[in-house]
Image 1 (spheres, helix red, strand yellow):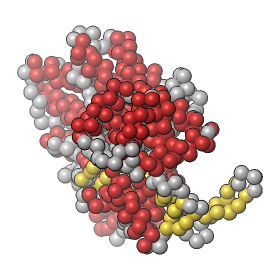
Image 2: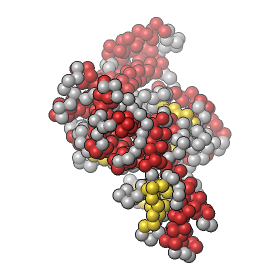
Image 3: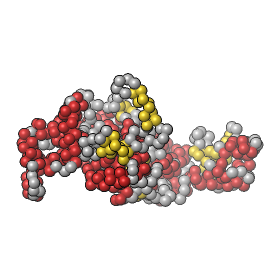
Image 4: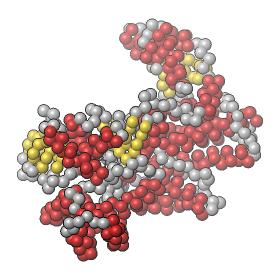
Length: 612
Ligand code: ARG
């Protein structure tokens, strides 16, 4: 099955070919002037240029060849030689029936499905999530769903940040604060025999009582700040990190406790937002791969010594940048920077675990592509890791791609912070948005007759839609301002508006069911019906664009336009009061619109409530 644009393109291409012109010029696109036409073809202008002929004359030849095509209600030459096309009601009706009968609502599959790994979310142990993680989670989840819907085999991985310097900082901070933990560490670290499962259980139980996620949330920022100022403190944290990575018994046990409490809370928050990872792997999971990887990089001659650290140079000859030294002088250095594989303390770094993860994924899943949905500010990091991976032969050149995005800003134009200036906790954000959603519902006099549980469910869905749609309606590269008042409004280009339209259709369909009115074959006659079908027909193109550009905003835009078109249709074309056949057709249109709208929303990770 193909959309109208593709079907028409074939016909127009054939007309070009018949006139001895290049067939690819017969490409048809939706009209820039919907008041004049449904579709247009600009090929005659290009053809005229190369053939040195009059474009209107070429267009006339093409339109003549198209005359008699039953799908077309009108073919016209406009302006300098544009071909304007209006589709017949019959063709539109047929296409509408096709979409209605299609479980995929007119969406095509990708040719030659691939194996895709989406690396997104990227939360860290104990470090509160910031807006970058929120955007990564929202965009990554949508990209994952879009790719999967197109037919690829897709796996989403959270890539939990659990093996870096912040772990050493936390281990130090917890020991400083709690003498019991310090004593436990001393005792365990001094062991010469392995810890028994029973002892381990006891230790975890004691830690559960003493160190909660709230403690980690409180301690980490303090420790991080001190690490920035106090070189000795920083060095100790680095040593502790190296000792953890060497599996020092006590630290390793303490670290497992940190990671467990963080993960439980994070999974709960992600789940509330409709973000579910297929894999919850962490940086630490590739630990075993690091030593052999370093040996292999060494053997391949890729490792170099750099003041006690081990690096891989990734810049090609001639690739340089200017760098300012602390004394103010400027030097020219290779660019990108080298990949730091082993620090001078002997630790694995952020890039080390990323490189080993490329290898791990190749072995476990063998993806044809890996998409890293991470803040644009990490672009350099990924450039370096990808180059190193290609050099080492761990991935096919071009198969690793950084899907960057801009920031969500506060009204000050800087990355969003809480009123107190801290990082925003996901849980707090959800709570804040839910409160707002309840307010909005009451204000709009919605959900008044729902029981308390259903009202909560609706408020939650409105909140999630508000947050996600506000993010996904922008091209991911664009930064935007967090404005909860605007995001949560039931009017304008918002998630709640879309849910409201979906719920309206649902209640219409419920009423029809109550009155035992059945849907029937679609017959399109009215302008508002035509517009609605033309939009439904455009779903596949929106999906293809979103897929190719890794940009869910194309789906968001489609969903919004579809909801608008439905709203106009609903106002212009009475449904239940209409004569039986018309009523059945319009009911079918409404039903199909709802299905496509919910499908589009689902691709964005948004669910509509039954009532509001
Ligand atoms: N944990 C990282 C951070 O908070 C993000 C991880 C992104 N993914 C990756 N493979 N590096 O910045």
